[in-house]
Length: 393
Image (cartoon, rainbow, N blue to C red; front, top):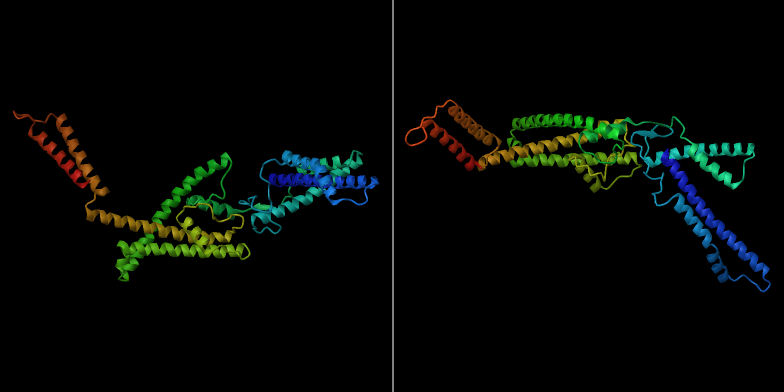
């Protein structure tokens, strides 16, 4: 509503400025023609003189139009209802309730609002005529501006768009976050922080478990089919990399069909579709290409997120296989892994605890050579563990 009023006020100011320029030219030409006719020495109107005279005469009118633009519009960005300036992420505004692109919905709302504005303007002017308060152009100008402020959008033209909200929350839950829609109020941001954090934890838990289950099933199938080479090493890693590429192609194909059906056959180049698939599956979500909420339907939730989820599973399984391969490589290379380091640190803590207990129980025996037998053995055990740690590291 605010954008529509700003749009109308800005364009009204521009029309006034243009009208001021046109009026100044008309008045200057009339003055020149009258002066020429009154001068008996002037046989014909000189074109060069007319051009110079109009340029000089219209300077005041042009400056007046510039002042109108500067005062009422200023340096702010002009509102354009024919582009995607208005967002319809959570609402759908149309005659039949169907989802349309943002600029189509903006145009539709403006047309309905403009019809009401014309009616409101007529009411104000009729009221001024009945009260004998009509002073011509000045009252007409005031009535026009008053009609802009008093006009509202008719009720029943817009409804909630649950599909747009669902795809927004899907991007939050999966940490894709394209950035095309975001909460602006403090309450909305707090809502997304709390529920978004819970959703992300839930999704990470379910996605991790799903990845392990799918990987176990597929590895079992390969083993039954005597294709064990696909379950380990570089071959398994390349297999899951190829699955990631296939999932990207699948997402790109779905995106092509989606954009073609929504935007009158307008399909992005294949390179852009693959780029969208990559930033979506890897949850990078740079935001240069995203899923628009305004034209997203409820039925789209059954295949668009499903294709992305398959890609997430392939990426998760790829990293699981990579982790397993790095673990095996560390064992063969003698590089300590977490389990080895944990065991050595546990042994060191046990020996230190034993030393502390021996000292507290006064169980250390000293002889002429200094430290007793128990203390010497404990110290040797600590040194042995330290040596093992140094060797492993």
